Length: 61
Image 1 (cartoon, rainbow, N blue to C red):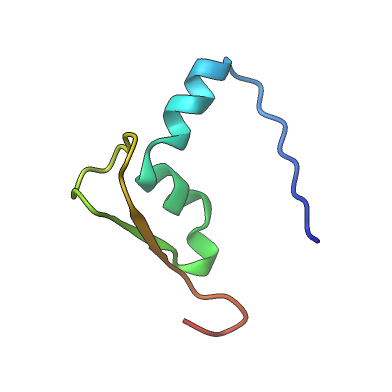
Image 2 (tube, rainbow, N blue to C red):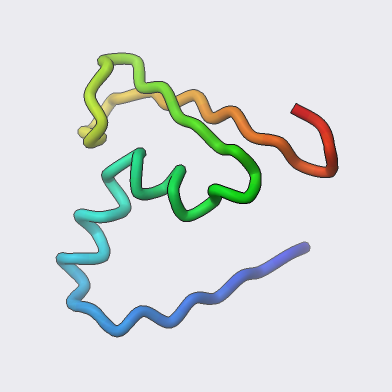
């Protein structure tokens, strides 16, 4: 099991809002060339959205 803990000095509401933004998520993992596509085309997630992530890990895409 791998566990990653990140301490963020920001209000919970700000962090939650950022977590709903697929572009922020992809930017946080730029090293793996991650991209995200939503089922609706929106970049901010809402309940029921489906997201497909593509990334390069261990040299595989």
